[in-house]
Image 1 (cartoon, helix red, strand yellow):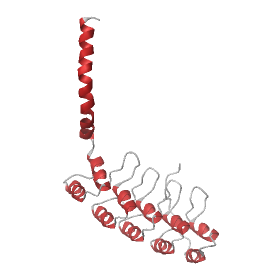
Image 2 (tube, one colour; image 1 turned 120 degrees about the horizontal axis):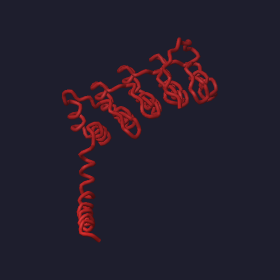
Image 3 (cartoon, one colour; image 1 turned 180 degrees about the vertical axis):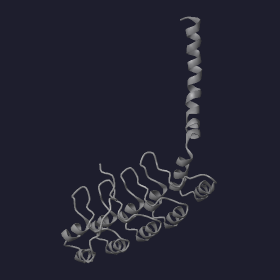
Image 4 (cartoon, one colour; image 1 turned 180 degrees about the horizontal axis):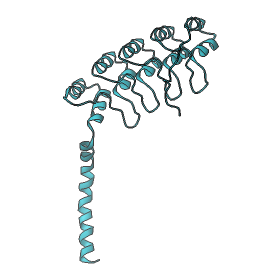
Length: 205
């Protein structure tokens, strides 16, 4: 081994432990403000969330998770935290923000049967006919859940009972007609007139 080779080997031996020690610190430094904001929302660290959204010139409220595409609204809807939903909407959260599956906060709220959240999202511009990647609309989901209260709410908010999904090609009206266990929902939808529909369905897979 030459003197030069020996010197290089020694340098690598010394540097390697230092690199291993510094990696977590470097990763922490590299965390974006958006990542930290979403983590604060997940951990319900109120002070940190408020501080992040109150900074002048900073718009973090619609940050999307890199791995799932979820925004802060998705997180708090899943948690069932109505106070957080209201706060985020007041700070400009996009009620129509989609995750990587095309899921909006309203679709998620409907799946979880959270009517008060559906109302709040609709009042903040949430589109009741915005579908996910499978073409499922909030109304289709409510019909499949046999959630009469949510079906009524969504119809009152302008949900289209004739917008079909991409999987079966059925609409909420057709799903309701097929489900003999919930005749009241079928009757409710049958009383709803057909609408002139716009192209608002989600992305296809």
